[in-house]
Image 1: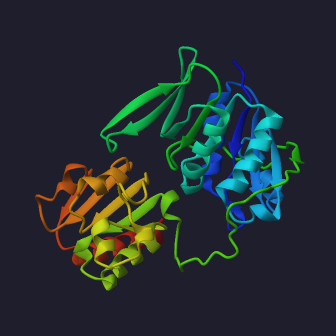
Image 2: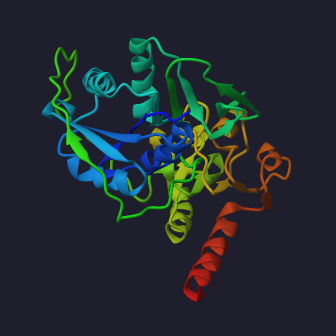
Length: 325
């Protein structure tokens, strides 16, 4: 059954987040040969439409309004509902990001629709579209299907491979005028904390530190290794609580959930709350002085040793490999 599927493109700092392209790949499975329509909301975002088309969208609908410059659930829900009303899709796919987690439940409630959240896999089987999502902190997985009505889902970043990009693809980019009314709050200014390196939620490589880093300065060798590998630096709740780093770096049940290709845990004991945020990483390397640390139970590779001795050695060896590659 061919379906029209909307894909919400998510822009940040003038470019699209990679999860937007992963959502198109997911929509390709859901559409079963139907039309994929990209949706862009914001101010001055029309130029990003071609990126969605090059990555697999058939056409793009753009809603631009100065009230959409900064995200708000009121403004974005009005804009997205207007697009849905005009396009009348059979499916909607968005990223399971901070924006997606806030916006999609509100849209689902307005549409009286179900919502499958945090899907890590999608497949067509037996005439149904099957969504796979983790439960019990990633210890088990469940499969869900939509038996009737709108197929509405969010996908976890770094789990569904984007389609091959083709800059020669062409498609229509149209503007839809939407009047944004009755905003309960208006964001006048966003003050961002200084950050370096790759976006943690979309990083392919993450070097993460726990209480074992001992201080804020203890993150220095981790940052150096992350720089060599082109990755991001994360942290456990314990490191954040100890004021070694900002809570924006926290990975775990009450922090970010990540699924990088490589996760290197340095000085992290492996509390269940932390494992809930990273245990689905493709390859996990643990470095800890305690051979009985729980982190080794989920690690693919373990190194028993002092992180301040091991991490610099790894950094130097990876640097040599990059020189000779």
